[in-house]
Image: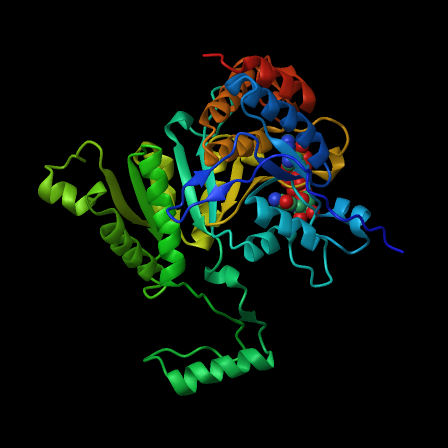
Length: 423
Ligand code: NAP
């Protein structure tokens, strides 16, 4: 008989609420569901929770606190709910109900047509924006000359594009049918799909583009960031990626009016300078963007892009500032947000109190920013900066830094707490 434990809410604490205009209302004692994660997940979660509580205590001196609420997914859900239960309904209900969650990495079981837990969470909760801030921390080894020049926040569309997963294998009945339909019925002029090809579909809609671009522009306005760049491949895919660009500009003009200026406005009306208080909206073709971000990183701040471009660009940017180990991420919708470490479970190090908790810590900082607790977020970032500057780091950074002191995962957490408030 599988074990089954009904998830019980914590019986204390309040709920985060979302308004229609996208703003978040947070009680002083919000319930935040958390998923420890598999492999090294429990190690990094232990270190991170200690840092989160310390940051809130230091920022608000007991006036505010987080009521942590454990929910289950991955291997731990198997042991709590029974075999083959990877993502219990209870967990989804809890995240929906409390509107927020933070999670460690989860194993994706191989085979059996199993859908990734992360992908399922994004879809069932309609978490349409994948948000990835990428910045350099002084002292982290980087492959480029000016790593401090890169400080971007990437908004990647999370629900459509080729990730919609509509494709058929070469030679299948379905692929043959689609090819026949394309070649015989639609008859695109001068174009034909080769018989025996595999076929995939790339759906992109106005609605999903608009909500993503809206969120990116709102973010730039709220955080006083200077620009938003739409990254697309519209020169080749005119009606999908090209439309992303057009819909993006149209949305900005309609909803943000005077707050946003385009590159054309700047040269035609403002003598080549962005007027103070305005946000520059521009667009770049994806291949150009990959070289721009390397050569002129300081010209970019907030980036909004379709799913596949965003996938490539986020990892390329993270590598530029010293790797994926420290990159945080969030998946955000209109009614819920899930903050997560972006690396995997690193199972060979599980239980060794060894790996870097930086990605989860920075995801926590994003979470505190999201709920308006910016003082706690700033303390976490300051603590991490101080620990790295002092060269008190986990093995992954220690092996690349000269004269660094090697510490365990939990000790790194303590170094972050000690460094909070440092200049
Ligand atoms: P991985 O777990 O990210 O590990 C690959 C390597 O990255 C590790 O061996 C380690 O490098 C380094 N690494 C990862 N996390 C680190 C940390 N916190 N601190 C320092 N170094 C870290 O990738 P994987 O081995 O391909 O995937 C393992 C499992 O994770 C799979 O089941 C996969 O499906 C899952 N996964 C989950 C997520 C998620 O839940 N968001 C994301 C990706 C993968 P060294 O060996 O060089 O020390």
